[in-house]
Length: 355
Image (tube, rainbow, N blue to C red; front, side):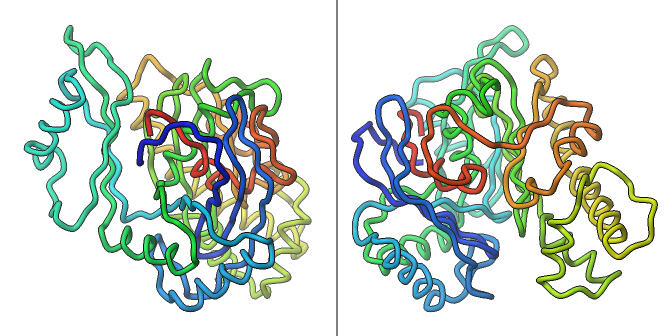
């Protein structure tokens, strides 16, 4: 969460995951973010897992090849990561100045996060001032990333011939994406509402709750497309191409199919698996409600691979009784392609004076 001022320079942003790697190249203008190139490819099997680089040679070879294919060489790089090993906490602390707050965290953070701090890189950001029990408090977001994870990504970017400038965690990028993107799908205004942005990814799902531009809660859930495919494989025996075909043929995942065809069977198993993911998301929502009873969720915004299953917005909307939409367009982010796919990349590219 390095602090940067606006410069308008070209940046390459990389979003790594175990299933797919996404890359964008662009620049942040004064009133918009312009993405000139956006591309993705399947991550080499076993090369990346839960935020850790497992096979640097295979991963760097694949990324270098794709960068070269798309005409990107050298320049500044921002990287976005997501891992259940990253510890994210929201702490209510005395409303102090930045230096006093930093000093307090240096000496007292162990009271809030009992852990071996020598193994982590710690960053914090003051989110907002609030009144609590008649006293003015500061809501502070604290992020602890394993040093091993930071070092391996830094070296990875250097090996690519790029200049590592920012390592961002996924939820922070989503917050910047919503804060600076303007209207979502033409009508949803993040700065005027409370949104739960849910990334339905392959290895994990990510929940980021933003209230009128302020990041309120971030959680990574260890369930996603992989767990869905695994559940299906236990009851059916389709190949990877068949799985994709079945997924594309779903007409409405919110509807229970009463027929007994293989497609209907797949649809019903998929719906049951998704309900398991939604159960975990519901626990995050309930925790948020317990902390912010006066700032209830107004909207759910879905993005990521599983969000493209037809009827996913209706499934979530019916389950949570909250208006739900699939991310399709963003007013101030100009990308010639599927913006839904590149939220993590674009968020990492965007710079903000606060993070």
